[in-house]
Length: 151
Figure 1 (cartoon, rainbow, N blue to C red):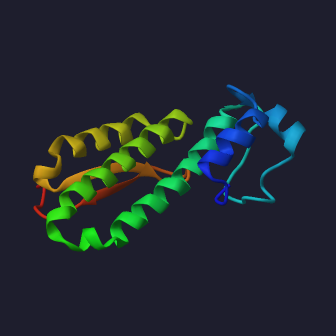
Figure 2: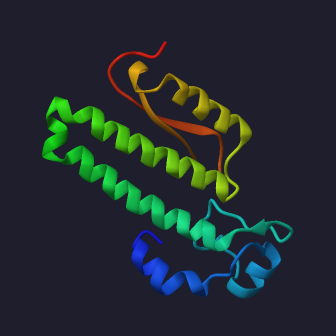
Figure 3: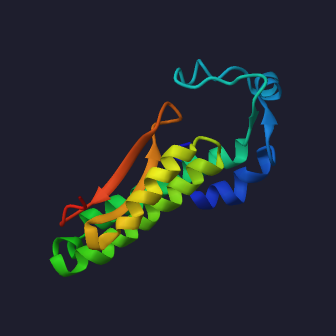
């Protein structure tokens, strides 16, 4: 998934994936168990999975990570007067990913509340972005902060 571009996903792959949700038992029957490919993942037969949305999330995450890396490594970021704008853009990308994480069923009301609380401080308090992370294995929050402490 990490090598699939967003344009290729839209053009060539989205239509090959089941729309909506697919039961774990149907997924296992059609594609087999995922444990051999990803030992951290498990498909439960009784669970409904948003296969296309989950694939799209992974493609988007890779795309957004490339954008963020480019922004941070860019010459303009080295100039202090550009940092605020770039940090705000990266923060927006983080929030988009947080919402996508929730959309595919990996979010949780508590992590949503923490992200919302952090974002209520905003850039004036040094908080530019926040998102859930952790591969579905727990409630990890990633925070983009800079400058003034928010406490």
